[in-house]
Length: 625
Image 1: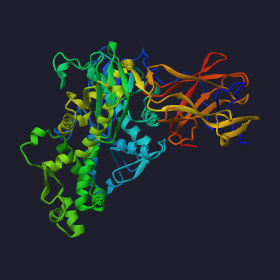
Image 2: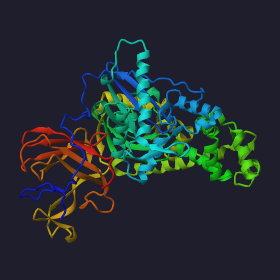
Image 3: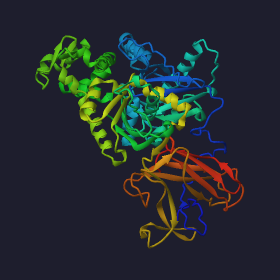
Image 4: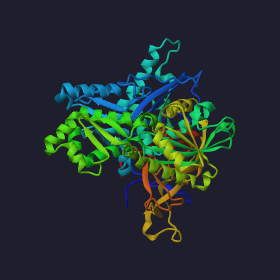
């Protein structure tokens, strides 16, 4: 029989938890260090939001007295053609893993090192688009604080450290920006409510991961809120004047009560979608749970890269990246410019001209003993692409075709969402996010959904950032959300031969019990209202001296699972209640209530005997036992 403690069950068939004995230190009970969603912080003078994107990141802020007067800084881009309100999500560390630079400054410093001190540059770590790496990793393996991401040369470091460097830089830059202004407001860290944006399709461990990274960056957890990107954009657009929304007509209220619209948040890495309905008072209610995929702007880059690899081969491409890193970066920076070029700017040309580093063709000829223009003639691109020295001229249809995999993925998913009976009557598509500024993407949506009005705010790439600031001022703007999964705890209950499988019978403390029972707290598809607690469960310690109660949480897409080891059930993490400051024996009863209606899963625990709050928290970032 297992020597692990089991939380006692008394003359009742209520589920009882089978916790693991934890060797983690017991946390001294204290007030929860997470903000209560919808609460007001009287010391808060300002809300500052960090939009941590796959390709570009930025921040914005506004003071409490003027929440809608949102300020975004301008970044010193090397070229006026590049985005100025955001900076590349790029981190540069030295050989000892010390932070050197972020954003445009990181790109410029690394390019200079690669050109002038190539040997020294080889020791530096250059991380770009690592948010997308995290998304790719969590689809294949469990996310923990030990999860790693790779730099441009494939060397790995803990992801939480790299993310923390980026967040710390943006936090410090914001504070310096405020201090440099002539203002009568004295801002301290404790007077700032921080908001960090995450894709709505990210799961609970990914959100907790970002919170951990922010804490490492010096942001106190109690001052931090997490905003879902499409929700933030929706909040911002609702506040815009009609004339600032393209696709609207005078007199027609896109955000009037009763109106339903699909939010399509197209970023550099992921595409997030959800459907909102505007209720009385302007509050937003989610009609369809957030969903999406990896069809963002990075996929366009990958399609372009795949074309090059069809010509020169994958081995050459990866070798060029490692040996000619500066030129490799410049190659894709130029592609980024062409990708963002307005259709009108190139509509008269049948070909798109791109600059290719001269070393690309030289290196290929040196290694393969063949001219790259001759090699191109041997491929299917022989009549569609032409090499001319340090430039390539690409047929316009081929160039637009780089967007096809992304557009096809987006269109297919929008069709699936609009076919859901729960969103019937939705005839407006609100496009936000940097990738939504692409005329090719916009046209693909208009062509696929002629019956819908496509609405796009000016500076769609800043909608999430500005909306996150508004969300920080009023978290109650989104009044309800849809449960993405069925959540429950792993427990045992009194064995019933009419109900339970014989193989699951175990004997605990002299009683026959059924193991691996899925004790459901909330069901997938349930409408969850803000700050509403779902399900109350009572737990008892097994020993007089027990200091903590810990038990596993599981999720599944199934509506009514019976056991935690059924196909589709996934271990989420642990919920731990600290009972170290309580007196009494086995009669100590603790009630736990889970809240699912906010952007993060939270828990409250009550000592029934004393009516005191017991400290309880989740850990979603540990390895599965």
